[in-house]
Image (tube, rainbow, N blue to C red):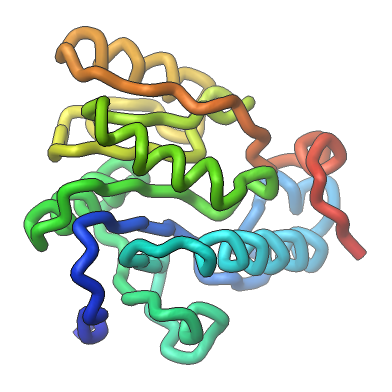
Length: 208
């Protein structure tokens, strides 16, 4: 079984956090090319701690979705997080599965974030849920052409299909789909995802 007992929260809003299991040689591979696997792992572990410190402050249902296996004893075991396992052959299919399940479970506002953005803060996420009061979607563009946050009031599976994930076209393609599908949306400020050494230097992340 890959799902824990549901929390008792009656909130109609849920925050999905996608993470990779923090394993040496399997995280921040682009960063590792110039800084080594150990340093890349240290950076990612710090990003995970930052992400948790942000999400801990939010009064919504919260879910952690792991890339490879559910860790029953990690930092996310403290803080009222439900734990799930990502399913799908690429990032889009994995997000599609998570959104589909959240709406099927009865949530009305669903927001997803990753764990690559040290500049994210609770206010941005709270703003995203508030934006869904007057919009069908909300999106936070990342400086690499992707997005660090996506939220929706309904399940739109086509948003997660036929994209070149982890490339500079993802955000623009998603916006194009919003317009073609007449989905009203709010755009949040652009933030910096940390994928390369240049990203790390440009970020507010302090490393040892």
